[in-house]
Length: 91
Image 1 (cartoon, rainbow, N blue to C red):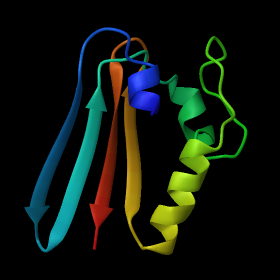
Image 2: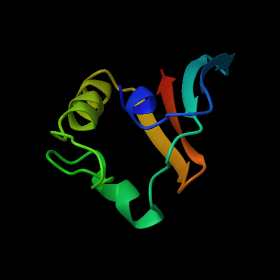
Image 3: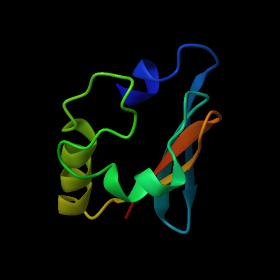
């Protein structure tokens, strides 16, 4: 939902790969990106990294909890005004 919400123009792409018995899914967008100092907060409940958009701040927090429960690692690479890449690695 965030990739769609924060990418008004550009693209959203999903990539998959398997390497060393690890399945990787990457969600890449060319949206607004996330400020570097905000990235550590994005998985916290009720935190909104983009104050110009309405958000309840639960989506990424719940996603992180589900990933943790299933031993799926989640990593974020982002550059403000250029987009974000969320990388999920399944054991």
